[in-house]
Length: 211
Image (cartoon, one colour):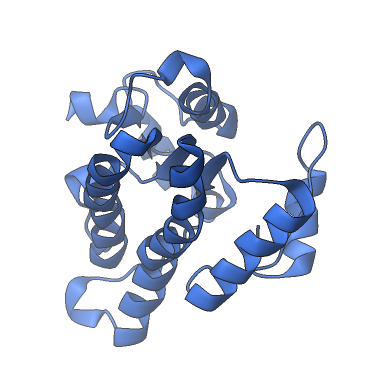
């Protein structure tokens, strides 16, 4: 799922196996309901939801504009709420489902210049724990993955000097890659995690532990 059909098609084409792309603005609650209905009409029930939409609008607190705050919270937090609510009722009826929310270590530690991003990702942790408590009795598991610095389009915008400095703060000595996160998501979506809910799995090469 991406904001545009072109973006969704690009994401789908980059995946192995069979995939289909859909366009949706996750900050739009009506669009999210329509999306889930379309997916279920075409492909069947949603068994696993991964909320991975994320944007940044970095600036120091006193220079953050209202739009910078709203855009980040609407996409990163409201978007996860909208899609989770849209799939939850069906999962509850089937007494089965996995919801995996992608937070960030920044939501656990904070970060200068990212008050809006940190708030959205910390909010996602609290939201996930509350949803886990509400949905557990219906067989729906809700967990969180909190990545550290991962080599993505977003972090590619950082200069080489900053990337090198960040790598020095990571005990494993490197930034993570998408496969590091995907493996944890697959675990949470599979049978080996059937007795886990409301958990936050930090995938950061030891950075938070290292301080």
